[in-house]
Length: 400
Image (cartoon, rainbow, N blue to C red):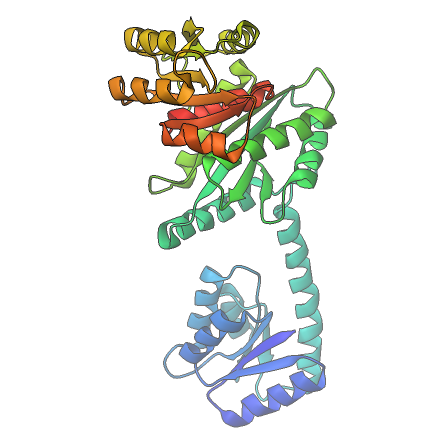
């Protein structure tokens, strides 16, 4: 154990330090209370052996200060020349665990350190248990509160970007919660962290992730949970980013929970910037292939919060329809009659600067993507992409 010895008498310090080191512990020394508190903050010793009466900060003041700031329990042993019952009771009331008489006896110090090792080990176990939800193996709510507060402080101080994912399961039986927790703990990448945050919710902290990549991570976590729980279990996921505002832990959790609640209705991963149910996202689908139009239209029409306001079979029709219907997003095939997708994208953006263009093509080469991005597209979809990828790219385009 690391043991901090505090006494303004050099002889006493050296005697106690020699005894401590002979018993196999590491001895740190300080000559007064102020020096001792600085050493305590730097080294976080398991045991403090302090003189009770010192110039400046007394042993009682030092003990009280440590008790008010310590993260892990420190066993405090007091050395005093008046070790009567009244003095001992006063010392314990002010934060001490044990009282030793001066000059200290080696056998008494050894006895005290045996008790100290047992007590500090017990506190470490209790602290570890309190930081883990035993049912799910995820971090506890108290640990989440600590870690999220530290995360927000780093965002403010260093400008880092984080995302917070809220994962819910319904019904929240013990079996479902245990399976979901184990799946999340197994699935998260190194550096991420998962916590049990409520009766049916988990929170996953995703460091150094923007909303787009966090959406992909959240979709992966959702699939992992769905694979682990009974098939009738409903899994919902909402995410929020710390970017763009000064983050506050409670507000982040509220936003993530609101997005998760929307996910219960939509069946997909929702984020705090998603369009609300009362503000449907207006879309036009432009593709000369009728089968592609039909398939895209079917995906979009069954998605809550989306409204298909028109379909076009060539570039000219796409431009005309967009200028007339004024959609939020145009899904634009790259290779169409009447000028092609790039030309149509330029014309649509000239008339409607706020519209978002998502290019769609069977050719996913970098040159094709570059040509469409240069024409004003903010998203790119390869034909045949999974439904959740199509919806993710469309939602992401709205945030540009």
